[in-house]
Amino acid sequence: MPDEQFYFIKFTARDIPSKTNVMVVITIPKGKNSVDKFDVLVSQNTEASAMYSTDSFRECMNKIQRIVLAGQGSQSSIHSLSNAYKLSFQSESYMIELLHYLEYSEDDKVKHLIEQNIHKVLGKADYECLCNVMLVTAEEMEVIGTQEDELGDSLGNTESLPDVVPPGSDLIKYQFVLSPVTGTVLTELRLGDQIMIKLLEDNDKAKAIVGQMNLKDEAGNIHPCPATIVSIDNEDIHKIEVIVKINETTFGRYIEEEPNVRVKMAEISSLSRDEKILRDAALAKEKSWVVPAAVLIVILAILWILVVFIL
Image (cartoon, rainbow, N blue to C red; front, side, top):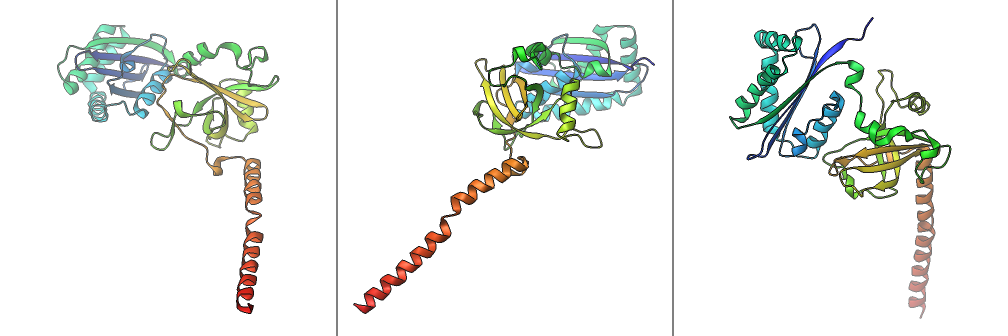
């Protein structure tokens, strides 16, 4: 049975005078008259209207998330525009028109139809609009091509391992666990910091490691885990590479393009049992002198009082 196909629509608009940048991503199962997924972004960040024909649905969603979590999204405009598209997608006539244009590859008409809500919600500015329509499978929508290009085939290849990764170790991909309110800004992280990450099952080796660490629940969700930063390469502020140590034989590498994301730090409860035991032992050692010292002070005080009264 062939894989189900989806129309994947990427739409961007920008108005230079008002510094308004818009991105809209939509997926529609071929042969169906309903939208599967969609998201919108309105921001003054020009990255919001930067479109690359090779960007997958997942890459677009990641970009939207990064910009929103960095506090650069216009929340009121995003909410209004999102509601406008929801109403459009619930309209039978709108969907019939959109699907007709998609079926006959009339991309300009698709662009014009999507653009109407931009003008309706954000005003009649002179927007520069781009629209790209692709027919893809569900698997192709989740591809993260940028990461593949950046990391190349070096992951898992001991000949290309960074200096901080011992020979024979596994090097896999991961993502930061973000915490937009209490997290630490990426550029403020230092070597030795312990952060929360989520491993990516992009190959058999990574799947095996996730299984060995018991990170996946019965529903198939991968839970975050703590890791220690062993290398940060921030020569290019928009391409920061962070290598972490997950355990003695497993390391992770990730490249982040947004320097202002806030990364969740690992807490004591997130650390491994061995790490907690070592930390508790060290703490106990530091405090081991407190009780004897207190007893000695009390004894000396009593002796001083006795000496004073006797004399």
